Image (tube, rainbow, N blue to C red; front, side, top):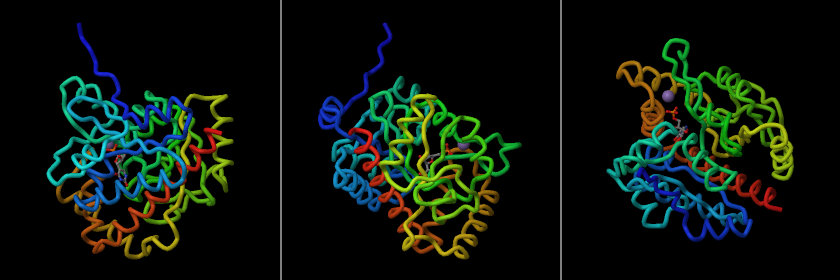
Length: 304
Ligand code: PSU
Ligand code: MN
């Protein structure tokens, strides 16, 4: 008989879910593939603290030795963040193989959303969403994050998508997938390090309670997710000229080294972090921290 390991929920997360308390899912790819070792563990702890301070229980998600873990223990968090952890980046298509073969890996927005929903967690805070890559008309590189958001009833709080992506096309695909995009206290869709991508959001909310009201109403009409787009805090936004230069160099680096597919985001992030002398790391950390705090506030509203 073929058996699949069940979800491994931490006692704290399990108790919170049974008691109807707010829980916020957190992904592990941004830690293992998006931030340097050392810094990633500090950020991981900070994110969990931010969720707790806002009155919710954090559930950081990863696959460890074939077990889908919902709510990593401190030791498991250290393992995911360790230098040379060598974890695979697991999108939703990779969950079956990783679990079936007993492997370990970090979860993306797509796989974290799916695992969180399976565990009964409906709110998820992260940094940036995957999207439609520039040149997708020939490469077909469209992140599974977009398709999964179209199918999983989750709320993803993020700072939009990076300008390395085709932002107009990404917004179109979100529309096709019936994913409402809400700007939090903004009329512009954010571009990760920058507060504005130059593209408007279709809807704006100004409070967590309003966001929760929209989510509840959306649930009556569709099973798709909701994207709550929260711009990087003003004081942490990158200088636009520096950003544009790093982006142009980064795109050239990707071309020169023939980087494709799931390696694009990690390679580009690494380039930004080194070439900006750490400025982009600070922006990255601050925006994720703000997003998970907002996610917790929305989870608290939804649990009322
Ligand atoms: N954007 C970021 N940082 C990240 C990612 C995206 O600014 O770490 C990660 C997220 O886990 C996201 C994934 O779900 O990359 C998308 O990868 P791909 O484009 O290969 O689907
Ligand atoms: Mn891709």
